[in-house]
Image 1 (cartoon, rainbow, N blue to C red):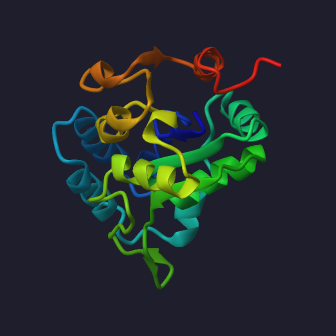
Image 2 (image 1 turned 180 degrees about the horizontal axis):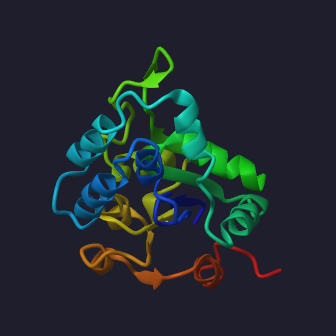
Length: 214
């Protein structure tokens, strides 16, 4: 298996970007409630994302960056990414979250992945517009993973997907090895393996021969 694709919020990070942004303008509780409904597949992901972005209208770019600066990788994530990169495995982050938050967290740990497929919060006159743009609003992660596999030149059987929420279901259902990271109840049936730490992800990848034990 030569592509390992991760979700970000709730998987590689226990930070929730939209909640951190919502803290800056007093709507974090509303953000969290919308997120939870979406992750449990109670409302459509595209609607949930647009509803959350709308709550951020008028937030300054500086305040948004301050929120992104709080996004942190989960314990063990940086080491796992380094090991995958060293092993020549193609690494990807497929997230409905926002590229600036992902990039800030990776840079803070001094690591990088090969691909980031994510959304963006447009800015005009130094403020968030309340809109959201990107390939993973209406688009789904199965299509993104299939596109990456085509670019890299591997079959879907050679892919691993790691995620936790309802918007991860499409990529979990098509990946060669679907790993649930403390998955929501609606997601767990699609997972071949369930883990609760990056150490367990590493152990799974070692057992599957994705990583070398040496």
